[in-house]
Length: 321
Image 1 (cartoon, rainbow, N blue to C red):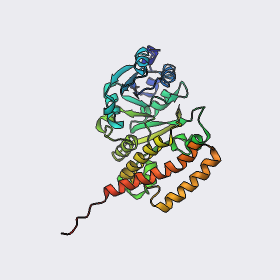
Image 2 (tube, rainbow, N blue to C red):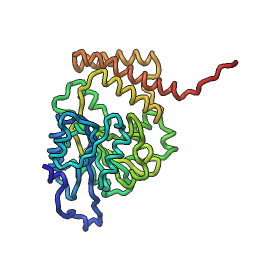
Image 3 (cartoon, rainbow, N blue to C red):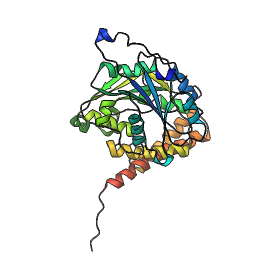
Image 4 (cartoon, rainbow, N blue to C red):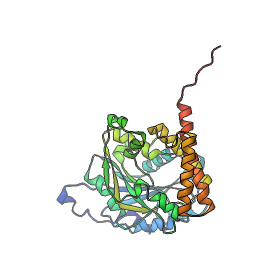
C-alpha cells in the first residue's frame, strides 16, 4: 500500500497531443483519531488510476487510537501538531506547505473516494483550465446512513449530479441576496483540490469554521473560477449527536452571517415556524429521540449563531453622562 500511495511511474498519456503539462499532485489529510475510517481511505487512494505521481501528507493533531501507526505503515508523509493548535484554515495551510504538488487535494479522514477515477476526475479541470483556482467533489451518503441524514444530504449542493463552474465580481456578489452569495461561493474542503500557485497568493484564513467558502469568495473576487465536479465523488456522511450538531451549526451560522450576511432564521417567530416544520419533516423520515432533538437543535443553532454575529457587528452606544 505504501508504495502505491506515491502514484504510478508512467508518462502522462495524451499530454503531448494536447500540449498540456501535467503537474504533480499532493493529497493532504488532517487527522485525529481516525483509525476507524483511515484503512478504507488509504485503500481507496492506493487504487487510484491516475497518470502522474502523487503523494499523501497527513497533519495529525494528537491521535491516540493508532492512527499514526496506520499512516506510517502506509507510507504517508506524517506531520504532527499539538491538539489545541488545530485550526481549520491554518492547519490546512501547514499541510499544503509540507506538500510538494502543484495541485493539492484536501480530504477529510472519513471521506472515501467512491471510485478509482476520483483523483483523475477532481484534478483534470485544473489541468485543462488555468483560470480555475479550485475544484470540489460530490458527496454520497454512507451505506448505513439513516433516513434523516439522507433527506438533508440530498438537499446539499455537493450532492448534485450537475457540474458547475462559477465566477464572480464584487459588483455581482453585492447585487445578490445573502443566500445567493453563499451559493455562488460554495466550496467544500471535505474533498477539494486547490492550485498551489493560487493558494500561495490566497492562503486559508485563521478561522474556527468555514475556511473553504471564505477562500472561495476571496479567489473569485481575485478573478479566478471555482468548479464543482460531480464525477469526482466521495462517500461521506455523519450520524452525530444533537449537541455536536448544535455547536457546529451555531458556529457555522455565525460565520456565514459575517461572510455573506446569511440569516436563515432572523426572529423568534421564524424560529417557532422552523422548529414546527422540522418536527413534521423529521417524524416523516425517522422516529427517534435523536431526530426529534435535532428538530429543535438545528433551527435554534441557526438562530443563535446568526444573532450573535449581528450583535457583535452592531456598534455599542455610549451612555450620556
